[in-house]
Amino acid sequence: MSDVHSVAVFCGSTMGNDPAHAEAAARFGTALAHAGMRLVYGGGKVGLMGVIADAALAAGGTVVGIIPEFLRAREVAHPGITETVITDSMHTRKRRMFDLADAFVSLPGGLGTFDETIEIITWRQLKLHDKPILIADLNGAFTPLVAAIDSAVTAGFARSESRALFEVTTSVEATIERLKHLATVRGGASALL
Ligand code: AMP
Image: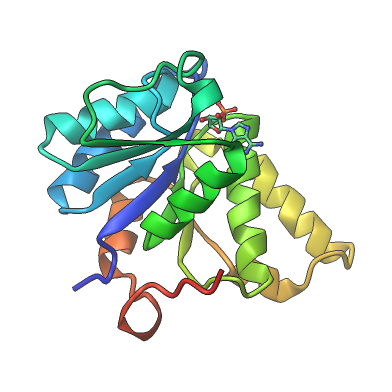
């Protein structure tokens, strides 16, 4: 039985060029709901963010969106989700997403997704938390980012243990299976921040 009941998902506020990304995001949202896991995400209705939220809701899941006031219009705050939390800044948004999650999953996205993924990894590197992080490298979307991290290890700028701070999965199904079998620290997610 997994300790993971609430999953923060980072993903694109656009659809990307390959329709496979939206299809995968929808399957992931549906599977999260079927697994009884709450979706915590950036609160928008646009791009893959909107797709995953719609899919989780349609499958009967609970969806919490965290969105800064200044992005409510730009990222079109999703009106139909279970709960919306409005924050005063991007930093507060990240912090609230962190607090509400037992684990993190990155799906394909752009610079915002990269930023959120790297930040949650670096917080773990600094031992500010010990929550699991999965990078879902669907259709190769994260292969260059993971290669950049590997390259930093080779160059001596990151320790080889850095690679143990996150796991890479390559399909929606494998990501969900991993979430179902993850044990968070000491029987519950640790929040040392
Ligand atoms: P993107 O991957 O660029 O489409 O962005 C995905 C999500 O990340 C959106 O909700 C953005 O608002 C968010 N985002 C963009 N930049 C940042 C940042 N510096 N810190 C936190 N979130 C960000």
